[in-house]
Image (cartoon, rainbow, N blue to C red; front, side, top):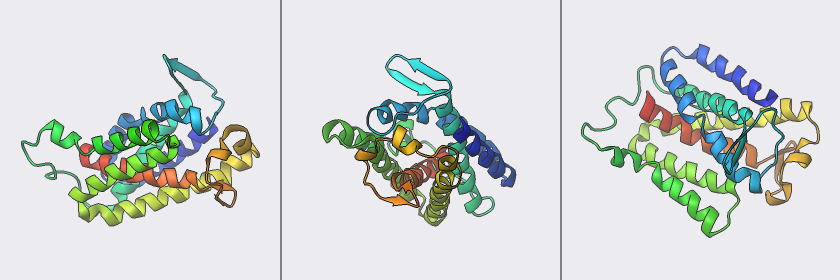
Length: 221
């Protein structure tokens, strides 16, 4: 919960910095809030085992209220920072041709989802690496439609990756030393760390940001 509150503080700062696009940031936070609980369906089996303040169970899906709060805040940060990187007034209006069907638009998302499913269920990939691959695939398809967004998306992704690294190095691991050994499946990771932070954490943040930011602006701005 303290981790989620950290990202809510950053969310509030980004929201205040935005001159336009605040509505898209709010819509994106709300729309992507469910991602955290959905990801936990796989992460709890092969990536980590956190303790929740408030646990929610829906059938086989178990997650914490903290997952919803984190996803809300993280998604808004990605969309807000991406919006800040774009030129003033640049948005998604006019990108999707009139008459383009929902199926044609949704095709941008399905390849990433399909790749994730193949990597997890057919090849036994760790869910974190599979999610990174799926997010990057969808991001590439969206940026193929809007190549002028590529530089802004990369800047935003790197900012979010650095933010995630700092969150662990300067905040979470300071408050809870030894928590990586207690909660994470460290033997399933590469074993590469950045000042004590597993490389997978900023890598996940970069991949998720490159997915959420462009997709959020493409459909919600």
